[in-house]
Amino acid sequence: MSTSILHKAISSVKANLPEPQFALGKSARKDSVWSVAEVEALYELPFHDLLFRAQETHRRYFPDGDIELATLLSIKTGGCPEDCAYCPQAARYHTDVKASKLLDLSEVLEAAKAAKAAGSNRFCMGAAWREPKDRDVEKVAEMIRAVKALGLETCATLGMLEAQQAQTLKAAGLDFYNHNLDTSEDFYPAVIQTRTYQDRLDTLDHVRAAGMSVCCGGIVGMGENRQQRAAFISRLANLKPYPESVPINHLVPVSGTPLAEQKKLDPLEFVRTIAIARITMPSARVRLSAGRQELGKAIQILCFQAGANSIFYGDHLLTTGNPEAETDRHLLSELGLKIRETYKSEVSI
Ligand code: SAM
Ligand code: DTB
Ligand code: SF4
Image (cartoon, rainbow, N blue to C red; front, top):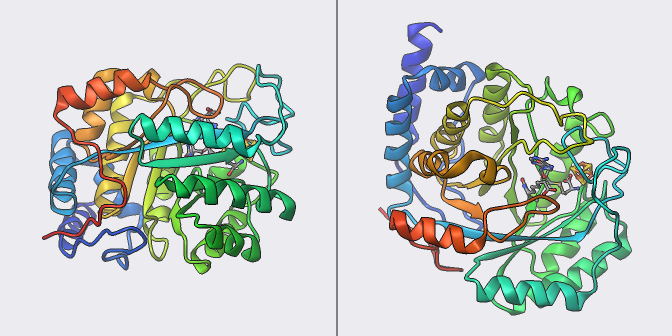
């Protein structure tokens, strides 16, 4: 790594510090361009220097230092026609996941009430679809209206969306749509072949055009190299505007999927990725997502220190496990971290 690139990366970090503004749906300074080389230079910083810079950014943009809690519900599980190599819900892999049909409104409402009672900020409904049919969108729209009426923020992840479908979801009150780039464009074909990177970018455009906030991130630890991780983060950070919400998943290797035996990533590389997401997307909520159970307490704490300020909260994710809600509440209280207030406007300095 050349010294000039390293210096440029560091000064870009500084250039990104001011102008925080992060109310729901609003974006802060989102016009910076992060080259892959600049992001790689961040990866190469000494660990504590990187963490220091990430913390500096985090404290400026999120002086409250609070943590957002998002609860997931799988509203349609398994039987998915796609070939995502990490996914236990792909019909073509022999996993323990049993396919089931779309949940009823009453089941979703019951889960959302429980999430609200447990103190969650956001309720995210996930479906194992390549893309929803229009009649599915109508049913999910009904769920969104009901969840929203409880006073929870709403998020959905239903696969690829057409422009009109995105508008229907927005009209129902959907705050966020989750659709991940998952990895870098060049590593992507090693993981997914049934839809293209461009298909994903098109869906993100439809979500933006409909006026929803974007939740977009991916998975690390799938066998990508550091340069590919840098390219993935650079791609997210250069979206215009960059996503309001960035889930960083650690691969959960599931038996029966092609990535079941994937060699485990060095945990510090995961922490570095969180820190770099914070630096390059300073006003985004960076969510510590799948894989928290496997990361353990100490690494999660380092991730919070590196700027993660959102978690999936609840005893399970879609089909895999998550730390128990009680364990998470205890951890946050041990660290003196406050839970975010739902719908609080977050503007400061
Ligand atoms: N079917 C929709 C789609 O693919 O957009 C929505 C659900 S899909 C399960 C949402 C995301 O979960 C994926 O994009 C991926 O990033 C993450 N994910 C799925 N399986 C995972 C695993 N085993 N480990 C880590 N993340 C995973
Ligand atoms: C995201 O990036 N991670 C969540 C959410 N978006 C939908 C899903 C994680 C799924 C982990 C594997 C499972 O539980 O099936
Ligand atoms: Fe289907 Fe989504 Fe799993 Fe891919 S990640 S197989 S699209 S449920």
